Amino acid sequence: MEPIVIVGSGLAGIGVARELRKLNRVVPIILVAADNGDFYAKPNLSNALAAGKAPAQLVATRRTALAAQLGIEIRAHTRVTALLPDEHALLTSAGRIAYAKLVLAVGAQPIRLPIAGNGAADILSVNSLDDYTVFRAQLAGKRRVAILGAGLIGCEFANDLAGAGHAVEVFDLAPQALGRLLPAAAAAFFRQGLEAVGVDFRFETSIGRVDRSDDGYVLLDLKGKSYGADLVLSAVGLKPEIALARAAQLATNRGIVVDEYLAASAADIYAVGDCAEVRGLVLPFVLPIMQQARALAKTLAGTATAVAYPAMPVVVKTPACPAVVCPPPMGVEGRWREDVVATGVRSCYEDTAGNLAGFALIGSAAGEKQALAQKIPALL
Image 1 (tube, rainbow, N blue to C red):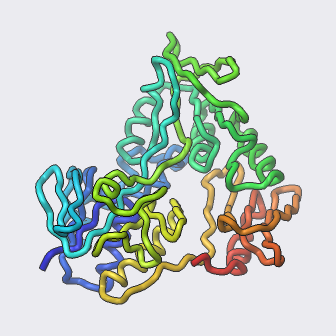
Image 2 (cartoon, rainbow, N blue to C red):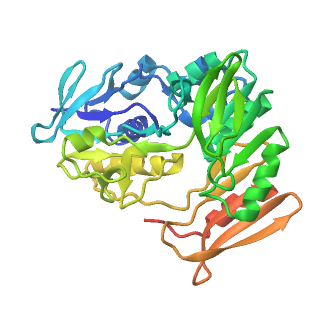
Image 3 (cartoon, one colour):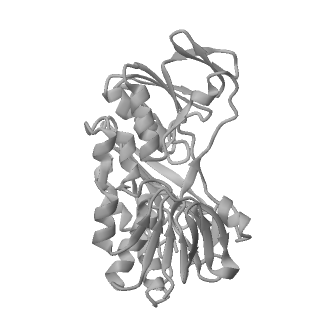
């Protein structure tokens, strides 16, 4: 019997393996990992300082223990070099692997901005535990940290670093933090909360050049203003990893195009997680990934199951200003209604019929997450 092969050892890949094992204890499963195969929760990377955890402490389950728990084979430090859909096989740095079913859980890669200067290559991105280990090593003894990007990950790192005593400047071309997630009043309150712990925002500012200096780096924005930093971290977003799929002539767009059953355009190939574009949606958050893993496991076990997304609020890990966001679906017309109170902001997005389609809860309003989530219909 050919195995089910899962490429990727992150939350999506391990999630599929775990869910499948609940349904089928005997089907052979091979998990191909580019890293050492240890399991950790990537969302925890952006608040490890506040949690007082060194990089090694973020590992939840070591590879050998994980393989034993799930009864799977994990091929660590193995890179996939090509997919062969017609042959039901893939080529790797450790040889050819045949499969009965193939699950692509290859994630996403950091977006790299076109920044000039002799310090541009030193800009760090954190997208894995290995990346985070490098970041923490370089952070030692440094005080000033510049963060490019005021989105969710950039703000989480800013809060974490500021709480640990670092001087943090955050740069973003947008006029506010969490620009794609928050309406105006919520964004203003959120900004004030992070500024209160020492985060310095530079909005409507784009860094075009980074050069090394005697005491760190000099950042130059497109208007000619300069800033100093000891370390520069880029958190401007991720792009789905589609290179392997595209080379194998699978349908791709922003991500690997899959249907509601997470099936790609070639027989017996599926995609989940940050790399998957499900009915036009790429949802790089924990709850959508777990919904995908559960649905796909049922399909792989023999019961075709379409993924369904209930309301899936995202908790922003910024203790200085608690925030929960549940963005309205793309294309849904409506308006934000914001209620500002002394200790928070409740923002509700209502469609043209007056139905709740999304929300953003800041400060004390974050406690209303569950009550509002129950009022939002399923996305798929």
